[in-house]
Length: 352
Length: 284
Ligand SMILES: Nc1ncnc2c1ncn2[C@@H]1O[C@H](COP(=O)(O)OP(=O)(O)OP(=O)(O)O)[C@@H](O)[C@H]1O
Ligand SMILES: [Mg+2]
Image (cartoon, rainbow over all chains, first blue to last red; front, side):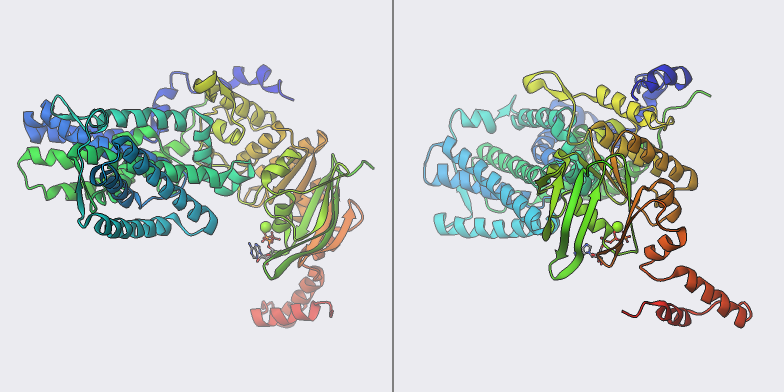
């Protein structure tokens, strides 16, 4: 059966010679989930370069939005992966706060080694993610509800336990070397080391989604869970792993913030819940799953950070940042929808 | 006649308290198309979900190649060579053709931690297999599946099953949403699979399609196997009646016609139609 194509097809319409041909370049760009996001990032950058002036473009200005992007990105990348698989995680805020408090209490309040505190903080994150995943896959309750419940439950638990153990809601810690250098220092007095953690997360997750076979599983699970299961993909395991990933990202940022500011607060982190979703959606990930890219999420994160920090350099009231973000979110979704439709209908031109 | 590839004995399935399938016994043979017929809600999709490992039967036994087997998951069924394209597609709209062709069985290249998805190979094989089924419009493995027509998607799903060595291919209403030409093409692909010695289980509501390709027919009425016969053993009218759930469609049509004659071409209103239909029901 198989040889049929080799003898007939290429002569007629250049079959089996995929995408690499010349005319396909534009099509390939259109088909990528991050095309809209790239336009968004470039637009806001140019906008603030014009209105924010040289201050925005200086090293200090760059550091201010890169730092915001790095912390947000460490969470947004795994949250994006989870969203590609069709699930949401609204618990990252409390995961961040609880791991942050865990580290501060274990290594600050009780004085245990910082390494132990970090391990426990990350371990707590993984455990929360595991529970989220287990609840979602076992009960079939939408992840929106499950993780919303976890976010509230864990916030209450963190607040309650912190008060019981330390009597306050804010605990100091003196990290010392090398934990401080690894997680919470400023390079050149400006750039957080978190930027390197972010780059690491981008590389690992990017490889996983786009190059490894597991990426295909994640896309399949998000695209059509029933069919994915039919092909033998262990859907519950994939989802549980992804919930653990997003919680680990949040816990890592909790550790980074605690070691950077030498203290932890119970109320930290709730802003990340919606900010991460905004970054992911601006980055071209389809809210219902099955479509998206790591590069897109990186661009979405950068767009978010540039708007949030860029506003300070314009001299305008920073209240306007949220308005811009709201409009941007809507515009991004509309643009991404358009690009997705173009991607669906794109087919290489056939020679007559 | 050849040995059955798949044999069900007294298979029943209940969802909680609702019994959906009652004591189904069936034999599926290589190189044959088994048409599974029945009205909406008769239990066709449920039966093939049991066959493909999505649901475990409540009772009853399976034999594959004469050996007892149990399917705890679709993966188990897949390992026994049973592939299922479920109702409404079974492909991933926003994935590329190459990626979706190899979901769950991704080809990789490279070694150790650098082992990665072989996109080029996946695209080439997918396009080749789809073209081998006569869909020559598909030339680019990077195209998204959602941009394909319904028939092309069915070809992708069938091509995939054949490529991975399925010997039982289950298709749930593959021609349901298709135009005449595309449906004909899908039927031709089914015949191609049959010729390779694959057993095909085809669920359809279309008598013409069933009669065009079927070797063997099984009719479900409210979860019981109401009829099990081979090609040529029943007339088209008999099959139509069975598919309508045992009600004599032909007679119903005749009565509607008679009504129209009496009432000067007026069509009976729904209540009256119901009465006509009730009148038809075998008094059980
Ligand atoms: N998960 C479920 N839980 C409870 N009842 C179900 C479930 N799935 C199906 N049913 C019931 O089982 C019966 C058979 O459904 P099934 O989907 O097998 O019918 P079908 O023959 O495929 O119909 P159609 O031709 O409309 O596709 C229906 O009455 C349906 O309501
Ligand atoms: Mg059905």
